[in-house]
Every structure is written in C-alpha cells, then in structure tokens.
Length: 550
Image 1 (tube, helix red, strand yellow):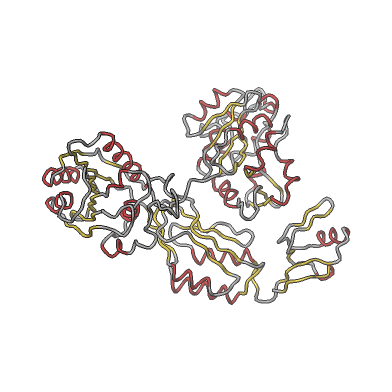
Image 2 (tube, rainbow, N blue to C red; image 1 turned 90 degrees about the vertical axis):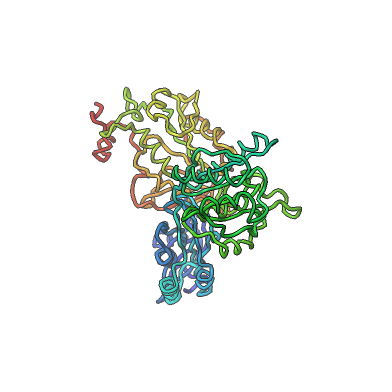
C-alpha cells in the first residue's frame, strides 16, 4: 500500500486518510475518491490530499476483515458485517467461551496489519454478546499475510469454542443448627436461585435437614429421585475437611469426593464430588452472598458441560483473588452472582415512538391495524426491538394510549406517556429521553411505523456505537441514503430536550458530523415507514392489513 500526499490528478480511486470538511459537503476518512469528490476538493482549493493507494497483492480493509471473521468463526459464533476494517465475532447462544490463547498470540504476530482481540478465556456469554473483534489496522493488508492467518486458523484451530449452557435442574440441601437465623437460609436460597437461573437452569424445591451426615444423605437421594442433575449442600457450618458431614453425606449417598478446596478467594472451602454422573458440591460459606466468588466459576463450567475435577480446580489460581483488598477497594460491591468477567448488561436503551395521532391515515390508527397474521403494526415493531440487544425498551404512548397498551399485550416494555404529544414529534422524543435510565449510555430511537426493521439490523447499529473511537451517533443507511433508527449517545440528550414542534432530532446530525458513523444496511427497511394508506400496499403480503383502509 502506498500512503502519503497525492496530487488530485493522480488521486482518483485512492482512499482518503483524513476527513475533509468542504463547503456544503463532508468527505469522510476512508472514502474512495471519485470524480465528484475530487471536483469538490479542487473547487475548495485543495491541490492535493493525504491518501492511501492499493498496490498489487493488497486487500482492502473490509474484504480482509470479512475473511478474518470467516476464518475464526466457530459453531455458535458468527461474524458480523465488515465496517471500517472491523468484523466482530458474536455469540448466537448463551454459553461459556474457551479461547486458545496460544493460537491467538500466534495470529497476532503474523503481521502488524492484522489484529484479533478477544474477551478472556472462560467468559460466560449471553446471546449476541461480542466474543472477539478482528481489526485491519491500515486501509489494506498484504494478501500473503492474510493467507498465512487463514492457514494457521484452519490448521491450528479452533481458536474459540462456545459451550452452550444446559438447562440443568439443581437440587439444594440446607442444613440447620440451633441459633441459625431464618434470614441466612432465605438469603442462601435466593442467591443460589439467581446463580442457577443466570446459567439457564432451574432450582428444585430446596430441602432442609439437620446438620448431620445421615439426614443430608437422605435429602440428596430424595433430590436425585426428583430429577436433580446437580446437587448442592449449603451447610449451617462451613465445611472444614473431606470427612466433614457434608462430604461424608455425599459418600454415604453412593458418591465420591473428587477435590476439597480451591485457589479462589472467596470460595476456598468448596468440596467437589459426584454421585454417579451427577455433580455434588458442598458450598463454601460465601455462596450465601450474591457477590461473585469461586462457586460461580465452578457452576459455569458444570452448566457448560465441562469437567470440574482436581486438575481444573487447581488451575483457577491466576485471577482467583476476588476478595476486597486495600489496593483494590470494593471491587465486588455491585457484583451479581456470576463470574467477575461476566459481561455487564447492554448500555443502549430503545425508545419506540408510538404516541402520534396517525393523522396522515385518519380516521385509522396505523399502529393498531392488524396484519394478516392478526398482529398490529406496533406489536410487530416492538417484537423486533425486543429481539435486539437494546434494553430497556421504552414505549412512548399518547394518542389512544390504552389501545396501544392492549395491542402490546403484556410485553416486557416500559411505558411513558407524552402528555403533550399533540404538540408534535419532539414531545414524544423528549418524554422517551427523560425515561432512559442513568445506566444507559445511549438510546436508539425507533419509529412505531417501521415494521420491517429487524432486531438484527438494530444490533448492527448498536455494534457500531463506540465512545472510545468517537462513534457517538450511528445512522443506518441504504445505498448511501440515511434512514432510521438512529442511535444517540447520552451526551446529546440535553440538546434533544430543547427540541420543539414536529421536528425530530435528525437536524442535530449536521451539528455533530465528526461523531456520526453511517453503516450500510443491505435491505431498504431502514428507509421505509408506513404512514399513509397508499404505503400499506407496499408491505409484504403477510404484513398488509386484512382489509386495506380506504
């Protein structure tokens, strides 16, 4: 690749290295310079530009990133579409990720143009979570380097393995001693229930018994008869030896003890056994707390179908210091009962605007018209949004608010009423922005009359949002024409609150061009709203109303 200053007469087809702001036009970094762009530069008085030109054997950044994504994809992991030389690898289901760190290290040493960044080994994932990002650093990479990466990924792989969580039924035995507070037992049940549910499992009704070997063994047998696929004993007193009452009860019930103790703190005093093929654990005292501790690491592996024996436990020491220490104050203060590496909830909220009067289709309300499957348009839009990673989903209501609620039929959304919705679109937008929770760093604004925008399209918009790289406003486009829904970083909420009348936030794009990222969507769904009777005829047949309004 040739990089440097290029005279305009030699620059056609070159890749612009830096954004150029011209009168009435912005040429963005990474744009391929065509005759029109060169004419605009010439008219603005630029005799030359800094650009990159591909040489024979070079592969453009997006084509290269796509091939990297294909080379590293694995069952349950799919690559995203390429953009700005980047492809992300996404989980298709919840599970525990294994990463071949040695192979990733080798891939990253092949050529400085090709990079692979991953989440840590043993990271628990939810569906649609990012696993890795492949980034081509310059505007192109040598074909030879890419071919070496593909060969190494093929011959040395797989680099990733996603082990789906299994919906195991868990059984819990709680032992009792005089003086044990009921709140302690209740907290233990609640924390265990949350841990199991987070891993797609379910908890059988817990059993209580005296803190003694024989009754614990009988309770374990009862839970096995009830279909338990995982057994746990929470003792009224912490287990201190392989021969303590909890481990002894596992042996008495026909099982064996595989390992006692672990190099993870909190969580040192765990006992790992099995009865037949069913894992049986004596929990450490810290299992009563919802904060992250060693039990989370063990449960994640069990629910992912991985073996947890002596060798696996003894390799947990690196990274196993989870306890609050003076040099790292309160790291677990807000922890939930999953691993400390567990991904936090998505920070992008969705606002669905559904408060308008539908005046262009009066007397009909476009949002409430049922299609041929019987589903109202607003229900289809909200279902699409719910299938995306955006949370929470906020529905702004106003005109015929009760009917919109009824049409959504108990879906897990948050409603906010725009009392002054008749004043125009800005009123609905401001009501929605005001309802975005503080934890959300951005919001994606979805229109209630765009039923063809899918959850996957919304996820692509969300995936392009990156504060660190300055992509604070993300606009989907089709063949270069901007559409909806648009994602806005929280820093623009104040300006949105100043809107008035029937104007949306789109005009703010011109103020903040340096923060706008456009992503190309192959389908024209992002351009198509259905707010007139005539437009309904353009819907796919199954989405048209049974009786077209006249």
